[in-house]
Length: 169
Image (cartoon, rainbow, N blue to C red; front, side, top):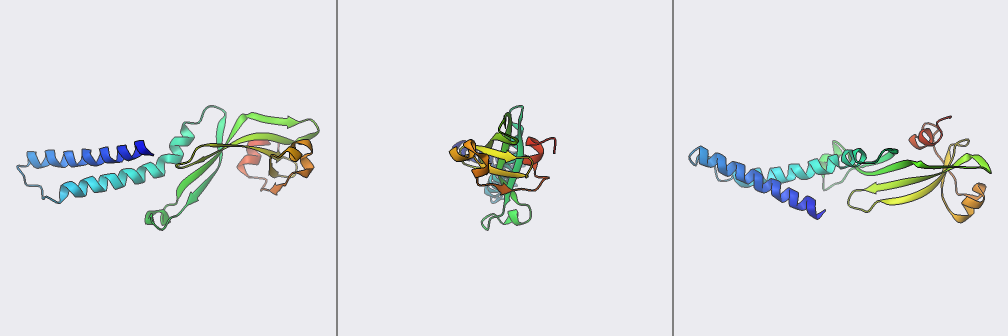
């Protein structure tokens, strides 16, 4: 976050410098309000660009075998442009190398999901996926011992998590 703030200020200084150079080249004909306006608009634009491209840049940087299976878009009153185009603030990624079968329950698979949120540390979340019932459950000790005791949540059969974990479905 701190580095992004520095980048925003650097963009503003760069825009102000470009206007200063333009002012010198035109013999001082650029109005005085143009420099702070250019710096402010550049800083605002860079901040918005950074917010909107965060999800794509994060997804692109994921290693081989890790894929995004869900995302969350939000709108905020203090960011009125998000009502026109919602901003992605959260990604859920599946690490395919962590998919494990359960010999006692062949349709239940254990997977590792990663939760990426803007301005927060990445979290790892073990999840059980029941391919036959199209359901998922958070991993607990009881759920690992006996999957039927898990707190299952139904999800649609065409959910990206089901499609990624249960390709035979």
